[in-house]
Length: 561
Image (cartoon, rainbow, N blue to C red; front, side, top):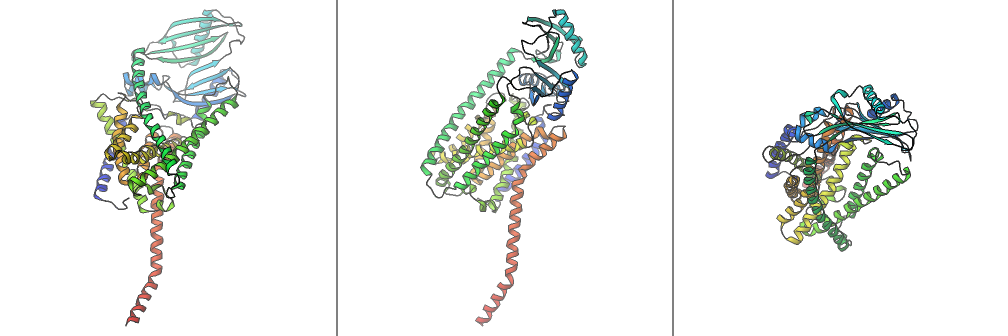
């Protein structure tokens, strides 16, 4: 470790400042934001849905409710690709692209209600699930059609004059007759996609209306083909991760008696990982509840979830412990103890070396953010790279505490991935390949293409981007140590995952983003505070001892005279 800056460090500072400037100035252009953010919170959407159903005359007493922020992924990708983001954002105000899905249900009861509320807080779809054996009227098809048209007219949100009826079907039940009617909207602005609206009439009751966007089959085939190639690359990369896991087990079994291994430090990391995983799962309970099927008892649903959560949480802790111990054991042989001491106890966390490592981590994060921005700006303009607006983090809007999601997710990914692909893999490959170049390149390549299942086209783009980033991160690990790359990874992920919250027009989500991203500054502030406190204590001690030291010097001088 280096507690003071060298010439290379000054260059890194300058590069990081420039990269951060590029990220702040051009991030919107390189990774534009779609209207995935919601103007209303989950509680607001729930109130809107409940009020809507009550106005329809439904009694929701004793019904449970779930709320999930969801989206029409295929339609969103198609429209972004064919229409451009600006028009996509405009259409997102009206079309069923992103929405709150509110369910009202009872355990072991088929009958339930679903209400879809768009980001502006307006109901866009409503479905009432009615059992097949429920009793009802036996209307003729033209009577059912008149009832459906009257229902839509009363909604005052859809103009049927812009639609044409394309299908009408009738199904005779044992105790009633059901009708389903489908209209197609006149939407030349959607290209080859179709906007359909379906209304069901069960007996003499309208069971709801549903809008859907049908994407051309050719586009779907191309999209799924590219996605499958990316998923294959990710799985192949996963095989290397399995090899690393087996290697970590072997290293643990052959080194478990070493007294120099920091068992407490590795156990601390494992417990921290378990805690983060547990908090993440608890925070996501509102989203988990939305997947409950009323066909099974509620206790079996939650029992299965608890079992899966405990299992995945324990395994994440075990894996963290094994890679931490394995990285330390192999690292001692390769680095001679110069880097692996960064997961030891409290004294290391109070040192100047630790503060310096933290600071370099923030610089590396800035470089990575700037690099990502330049990579996609250049790729989109000159190489045909295309990525739909990232929305994989939209489910955080439905959690108990949206700000917690970036914190826990960024912590888990940064600690686990840096332990695996830097701390353990680099040391292991240096030991057996005798080449630092290969030891840096191979983990970077595997780590990069393990992310190929992200929606970026061509399918290999994400792998290339992160392989280069992994090489730089590996260099920083060799030069500055584990803490630096973990902090850099955490800050990068926290910023990227927090951006949808920061860019939301809803104040609750905006301040959640401030809280989630702001946590990344806590480590350096604590370390600087401790360092300053330690320096102050030393100065105070020195000052208190100076008079005695002077008197001792004088007395010794006089004695010599």
